[in-house]
Length: 128
Image 1 (tube, rainbow, N blue to C red):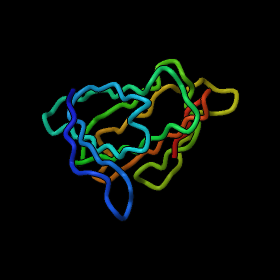
Image 2 (cartoon, rainbow, N blue to C red):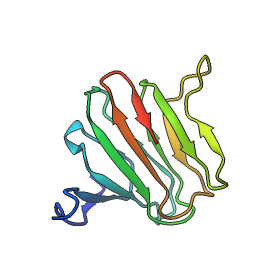
Image 3 (spheres, one colour):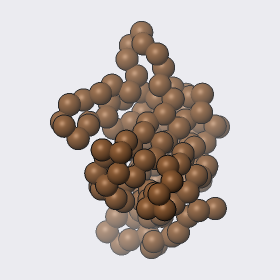
């Protein structure tokens, strides 16, 4: 496991924060966590969401450094939503009638602090 726990539940937020530094499969039991994703080792990697979808499961991913190239994949599950790019334009993750998207990537142009929130309804993933 390539995770480091950065703290415990804070009294003000109730969230657990962990750092991920290599390829990882997230579990349903990780729901509610904030993950600081870090590719400072120089290698791009993929984080895989659970394949057993459960309603209410949610995660937040935050990029630690500029240029970290990380992909979050939902396997075969469809991801709906929109992602705001660095130039303030909006790119749809899933377009009606278009090709279903199953992953979201932090590209080389992404800046530290960029984040994606995932929420599952038991059938699909939703991002913002």
